[in-house]
Image (cartoon, rainbow, N blue to C red; front, side):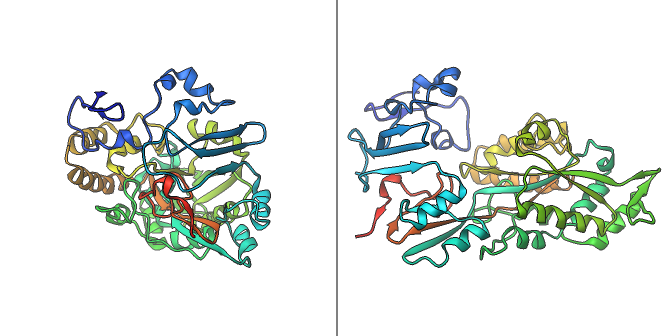
Length: 397
């Protein structure tokens, strides 16, 4: 990278062809002082170092102990003048944030649960914004565990799940709907999207699930639980939350699996155990969610499906798939063709029945009436990946 015609331009040269040249500049450019890992990890804990940043606003006041930071217009900003004189963020616990919004202390608050939405529903002069999150909720099984070695058992497990019913539980009281989330590569609103899960043959079909388990040699016992060679078809599903919705989802999943003879044991664990338990594969079935920070889905295909990655731990990855990813997807320099190849390969990968997308889900915010050009979440915003420039946020006259 070298300086262009002015200090505010740069010329970047890639070593080889790359389908997504804009990707490295979507928030990944940092000040050289942060190149050192120790500085990157520790330097901003008690000092936000405004001199290392750039943008329409700069830090005005900061208090780490109180969880408070405010911003003022940056006199050195070279773009459009920001519309606000001051922007303030304050850390609050869940109920305190709702109370602060109701009392007029803050202008925006998350209301993404039934209870929180109900608490602001009667307020005047507010607007409720709903948008699809650029996030994916997934459910996976561990193919390395003996219960799930057979692909027929894995397929039966997923075909026993009524995703429509699960979504009704997850979004109860939120007045939200979305089209099926059939891919981890693209969202349904993006050009080139294909419902890869449907292409793989997925559908809710308990009858077909029962037949798959019969064919795999798992017979129902007197208690309704399937057995094979004296071993029960019993699997552990940890839930790292005491949230009532999470509990209801787990109980619903347990009931669905019981209908086909799979004994799903729900194990409620502390939330701080998630990372250790997930990475050590201390589970048979796992659920989690991850956020996409940019729209270049195919660029991250290997991160999802290659053998040496840490997100997908279903154990169905193999060297042959890795080769297809590198040869048939990543080697393509045309973004549209690379995306089409990724969508086609994703459907093939889903046929291994290691993991499935469940939903994307809603992002719901309440704001004071008159707040315009709002993007309430840095990555997705109300207009999904089309995030408004932050300097455009302001109050209507």
